[in-house]
Amino acid sequence: MELDCLGMRCPLPIIKLAQRLKNYPEVVLLSDDPATLPDLTAWSRMTGNTFEILGANTYLVKKLGEEVL
Amino acid sequence: MSTAGTVLRVGSISADFQSEKPLHPAAAAFLEDAFARGWADPTKIHQASRKTALLLNEAKELFASHLGIRADQVEFLSDPALGFHLGVSGLMKGESHFFYSAVDRSELFTLAELHNGQRLAVSLNGETSYPIGRSEDVLVWQAANGETGILAAAPLEFAGRVFVDATASGPLVPLPPSWSTALWNSRAWQGPAGLGIFAVAHRSDWRNPLPHIDHRVSSFDFSIPLAITSAIALDNYVRDYKEQQMKLVDLNAKVRNFLLTQIGDVDIAGSLDSTLPHLLSFSLLYVDAALLVNEMDARGIAIDSGSACNSANMEPSHVLAAMGLLTHGNVRMNLHLDASEESVDHFLHILREIVAGIRS
Image (cartoon, rainbow over all chains, first blue to last red; front, side):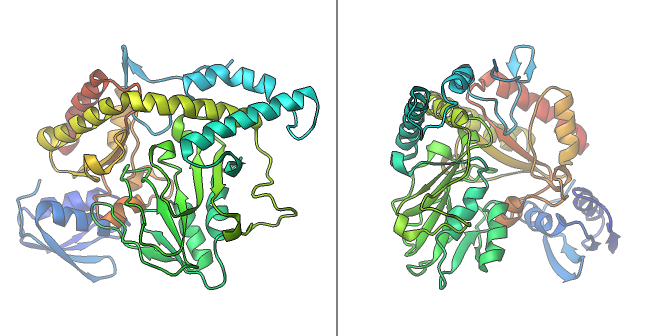
């Protein structure tokens, strides 16, 4: 499942990601917002989910933790 | 005659939690007098000059006693930011390595480019691991962080020279025993803006990094009346802070508890016992900080934010990012000395309502 948030400013990418994870166990997030990397790090810690960097502006996010939003 | 400035009020409740504070009322009351008596050149021998010199010396004694330095070490800078360059570059020698923290002020990041500095990582609770270093190395020690209020452990193991950034902590954190240079900002104690206090511990360690023609540390012009006013502000601020400190701790604890139990999904910077009690930074998950600041403002409550959408360059706070804290939905709360339980209750009530609206 790919979620294109290119051009969106914080906190929209994280909000859209959390909504999308309601129905999908994994999401590939595309985001070029400078806050996305630090916020994915903090969000993962706060919610128990996890992510890895696939490439420039591309993140693989996996739902492990709590239901979000 | 200047007055103490305007404080936002909702009915009788002060609702100003932004970082800027008006001039301390005691200093504001003295301002006209300072200009009437402190206008002359203190190096001349006329009566007016001797009066000005006397006032300036009294001011230096006040700064010295509250900041933990000698009166002859007190230097004034009309641009406080210049003190970062004087403090760091003045200690650098050919072989020196420069160490600074990822949560230091951005002025120090530009100096790090100049000196090929090594940025030290910071843990989630805001602690920087300091190196041992060599005697010629230079380290920045930020006594307290201006955004989060987090207090740093003194760099007791560091073998080199230490530049102390006390611009946020003012008189509230003592200098470490190994300090070499130090910088304060008059605004930290509700003094006038546009005044920095700079000190060098041992003149033999320090070289003036700017073009200079004599041996003085600072040969810049500065406003003597504002320096005197700042000393009055500092003297009163220290006394007021002592009186209000327990109240600030209680209010800070109340906000933290409310955020965790009544609002939730919140990332709070540092613990109460590791921060200055009048500062608090927290980030609310899934909340747009620009929207929050605007809606709080519409309800008469002033707060600051370190989120990208509130910054000039649209970059999130480097302090939050370095600590691994959530950068969106950030609120910087400054509990001023006149903050009351009533004003904090009012703030929390409105915050809960607005956050619930934004999150729904």
